[in-house]
Amino acid sequence: MTRVLMVRHRHRTNAATSAVTLAQALRARGIDVVEDAAVGGIDVVEDAAVGGIDMVLSIGGDGTFLAAASSARALGVPLLGVNAGHMGFLTELAATGTGDLARKIAEGDFAVEERMTLDVAMERPDATTAHDWALNEAVIMHTDVAHPVHFALVVDGQEVSTYGADGMILSTPTGSTAYSFSAGGPVVWPDTEAIVVAPLAAHGLFTRPLVVGPSACVEIVVLEDTWSDPEMWCDGLRRITVPAGAVVRARVGASAVRLVRVDDTPFSARLVNKFNLPARGWRDGGQ
Image (cartoon, helix red, strand yellow):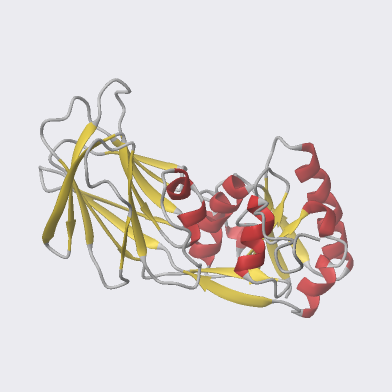
């Protein structure tokens, strides 16, 4: 490990403090630290100064982590998150736990796991296309708050249902604890390969979220009887207008994002801790 790219939240004091402390500790161990040139990593990965990066460090919340994931994916290196935000479900450890982190990074004392992504393609009625990807989710969202969007759901070429809804969420297992969860979607263990389809505030009898397999092609069709063109947001960072008649196709992504783990805490324990689930006491009769 010789060089890391550090992406931090620009407006949180604790993120700035943690970034300075960690950068100093890494440099003391002979590791070059490249500060982020733009949160989101879209510009920094094109800069010659970021050549030879071995790891991306994210210091902030889940939003900062998702922005940093763009750099990690483009550079083909693992991503480690330090939480200086609120929920911090994606991040690996709290900002107060960085004391031994520089040593672990320098010595390679960590594991790397792959997280599934989504490849998303939109075909407009004029046959032009747009392409994007997501680590958490792609959301096709209404832009007229007074009216729903009319969608059709197609899986592997089979029409499944139509919806009048505020939006449609296409989520990875990693994103199943994010927007999809708020829309009533299931929590899916992150080592699973699947796509969660969750209608958002849908009006109808069949509006349950669906979980489809890793080989499936999920299509969301924006039907013509729509008041205004919805937008597709990928990880809450990148926006594309989706005109009436367009089709959004989602598949399991060709490129995974590699996440750094510095401890062996299972996902079930992280779930209990982050959501403060009532899991204590029943084994010993509530003592």
